[in-house]
Length: 403
Image 1 (cartoon, rainbow, N blue to C red):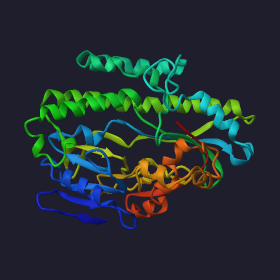
Image 2: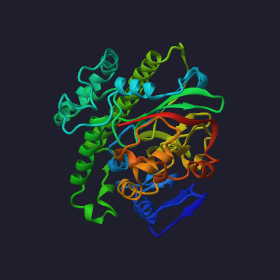
Image 3: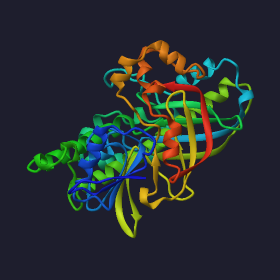
Image 4: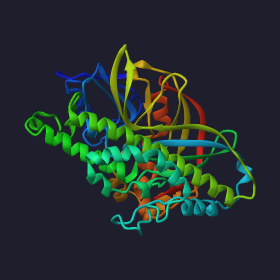
């Protein structure tokens, strides 16, 4: 573990040995560490890279305040993985049919606007969406009674959909050649709207003080204020939406897989359904605090988690070691080493094809920003956090669906 200190800032503890850390990310960490309500220290994961306001790959413990931009706008984004009874030998040689079946079963990508023709949303949601929305509906009404603008967002029609960017659905094989289904998504349009709404409200509330902040995106709500309470309610709802979103997608994906294969199977074991962009109340060092994990996963002792690599690299099912110095956390993935724009400028479709030759996936110009070389070496990332988690399964992708 490495440490970073500066006058007037809380200590920063970094599990980054052997992995690159962008100087801009270090500056963001120092900015966050200067906030007066940071509890003890910041914990930095090996996948750390520049984010909005605060770095992605950081664990931000606070007392008496919360920073909406630190949680971000992809509230509740996270992972879900299920091991099936299938073996690699049960899969066909050509996996295109399986990828196509999943793409038909789960809306993915995005069309402009919120029209009913948006390919990233349901036109007519299946029954599974209705069942899960019933659990979420009352909470959404409580929030929209106070913030009616959120009614105009994509919410019901985004439940059980993938999105864009680094969100994915994958078929993977573990070290015993067993087939896993793994997916990555969050709270979709409604979570984005909730995040942006409260980031704006925090800036507005601090209008007189915002010039004194290290970064305007570190605007915060003080505990006891109305917006603090409303944000906690809304963010907890968005995190629950994200969990249900992954459950619907998993159900749709497993059904599609069953239709595409002649071999019957069961989903044997759910490894985990975990957030990695979220905030929750926890107890650490004998104190009740708020822990914001911005691109980090809870890794309490014995707790299962998922750390995906980049498109075409390895991923890991892990078990937490309960390291208190990290506030019982681990990384949420490999972490980018370059921006999406830089990746598109540096690499070609031919590069993408070579890097993902072993994976049935899109290999066109619109996914070059997700090329494996745009991410840190996942093996180095895992080595840097060996005191935070132990590896239970190592997975390699054979099918990858992206928006």
